[in-house]
Image 1 (tube, rainbow, N blue to C red):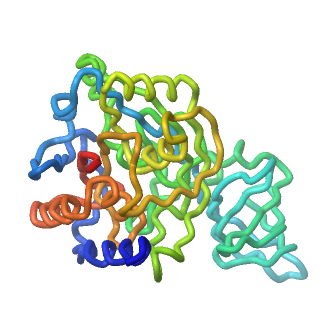
Image 2 (spheres, rainbow, N blue to C red):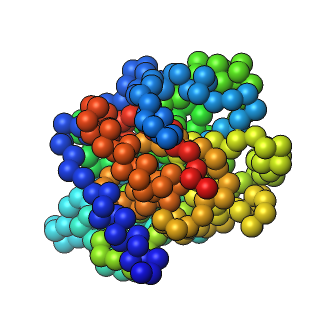
Image 3 (cartoon, one colour):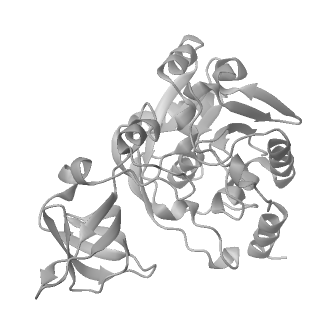
Length: 348
């Protein structure tokens, strides 16, 4: 059986039916009061604010410090000859070059069409393989998104009309680098108080950046071998690379906060150490793929049929993920971006 056939079988075996009521619509308050399932040889049910006691002094937590931008904008078509002027929903994905962004448009527009985002003109100058459009702006649209955009919440969250609430809640407390169109949601459980308690226990912290793209949560349709991962930008500073490599050399554990952190660390891994640098990654971690850098992973409960289910199965092993999700379904855990969390051990 080939690797892709094996991954297809794993994805099928890990499929499950989730009642709609189990999809979290609001985050726990306070953030660190969410449930935390600890998955080792057995499953333990804890609370996220117990995390300092579950880790060891000297462990190194690695966070993704990317910040979600208000990338969903209602644009209007130009009025010509008394016609037009309809609305277009724009989801800005990332800036490909100066003032040129890839974006999903609903409804789609052809090359040469123009749009107005607030008072800012954009022209469709290309079409990408996945259907995204390239928009060229006459100004730096990043400077205006806070005024004209909304946070791009996942479609399974009933957002309501108050975007101000989500700009705080759908953001990690340590977010710094603008660029994501979805939150690195494992980090949503942390509070400043919890971070202070981790510091007091002697647990170290480091940060990477991976700007989460819209393709991260795209379900696998068809064979795993045919699934195309969207490119996402990442960066690892020399300070972070040094901290991770020193921890590994010392025999201390590296704890990845979120699957995006795992993907960043594995993208920066050269076979012996984590290298500093930045670039685009399309890394696709599936069962059979070794996960080299992190020893532990903090992650939320993911959508069935997603690339993230394959990643956690590669990390912890299919049997443990199956047991964890069975326990979560039986134990009233809340799922997806605003839901509860798991602490997984690397199966290596």
